[in-house]
Image (cartoon, rainbow over the protein chains, first blue to last red):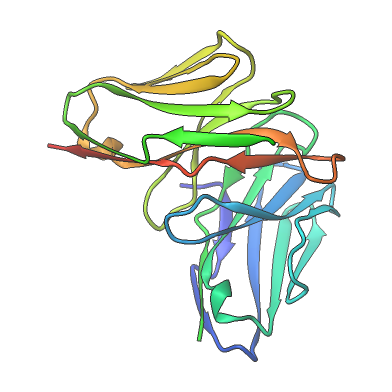
Length: 114
Length: 114
């Protein structure tokens, strides 16, 4: 079982809906990440939070809005998404961003945009 | 330009037939090379971290090695349950140059037939 928990596992939404993806870890990690993964492609980094502050935004469209309420939680707020945003959204955490420790991934949220 | 290239894209083995997967990289200043296993519909599962040339790590039927230009994931006497996509990732600076991020290769899809 993964130590990074993501909810929901599946989400179907229309282009005008607003929804949120949630991620939780209890490993005491201080860096948390959002990735997007399309079918048969590797994960692509979207955002990095380090000590609850946004440290990397990989030029992600503003219809994706990350939030880190505390050191254990990471949210991704979705609004006015496009069909091409359908993908597996993965959350990961690591001990911190500056170190060389591995990132540990959740099992993702499968998002479908109608 | 920093790059991570995995080969082959796909590999079919018979149970018990040993082989190797390759991950070559061109990075100015390696900060860690990571191997992950990903099953369909799941997030990547961490396997190994390698930091310096000559380093080796083992886990059950898997052994990872690292040189200055590439890493190999050796699979000895594989079983059908070893079937998965194996991802290699390299820790490198992001485009802004101020932080480190994980950049993935495209993966090798391994199928082990009974």
